[in-house]
Length: 98
Image (cartoon, rainbow, N blue to C red):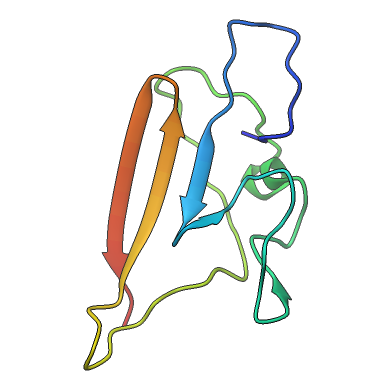
């Protein structure tokens, strides 16, 4: 789950997750409007119950704050996007906040 993980087991691959184009599990925590995003813990896996490695098909729940969310305005639908990518899988989840 952590991009910075240096795995000795070459059968494991890192996943990459962005939320509204900010790397949620990158090598460093991004900053937006002077706020450090995707905490409160670091590395990223600590916000996911400490899960660093997932088996194929395994689920995990992560609690992150703050997260840069878009809200609907007269000029924008306020569509938010979570993008999860690995060498064998690409998933985009879109949602709106009111």
